[in-house]
Length: 169
Image (cartoon, rainbow, N blue to C red; front, side, top):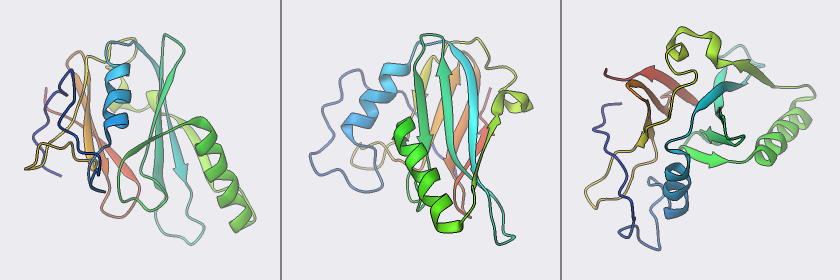
């Protein structure tokens, strides 16, 4: 996952009506922009537990902000693209997975306990940076969260789900 991340344009007019499946929609870009400038209070991982012995998958990341709102970024059930989901979608997915497997398959963890998040607490989300394709559309396989100098890259994992890494300082 080697991307050149850039800030989002303040008025996005170049996104086509027919957004390709590997790009964020205009609505998603605008949603990301609406969270810029907010102060992070907590972060939570939602992990899809493997019942077959294979690796667990990071299904979603929830960022909670001082203003009382949350941004939930998910890999989706097929791990094809990052997407913004709401709490109801997260709960519905967990319930469906539980019904199919006969037991709970999602666990929630406080991400702020991991060292990668230590520099992000109580900091402003200065920007959510995305990478562009040749047509100037924003790709949906990775994004960078910039917490006033502490940068985290959220991207699709090659084995499914998401992964989170430190970005350049």
